[in-house]
Image 1 (tube, one colour):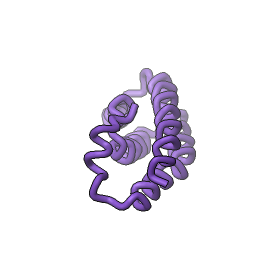
Image 2: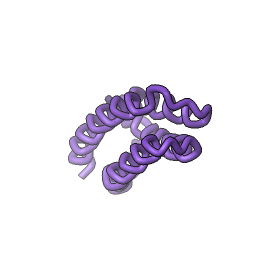
Image 3: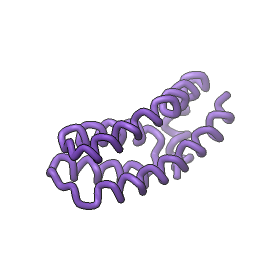
Image 4: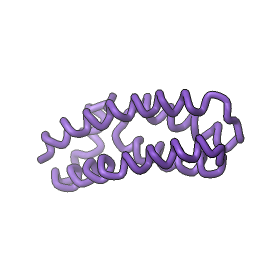
Length: 113
């Protein structure tokens, strides 16, 4: 869930068009990011798990969704440590959480249109 109060506070200095563009970029890139993360998890490529989860964590942090950010961080840490146990389960949780984020962002985007 987006912390809308923090989001509004952090983005109040930006034009609505810029905020809308930031949201659009996230929504557009999201499917590819998730496909890549799932692929590298299935391949057991810990270096790419770390890098992909790190990147996803960073862009997700822009929307102050602590649950999604924390799940991405956990996957990132497991990738860095080379720990494969539970990665796919974490990915499923992350996907569910970020899918909710996408729905929230689509609603928020209408407010910034």
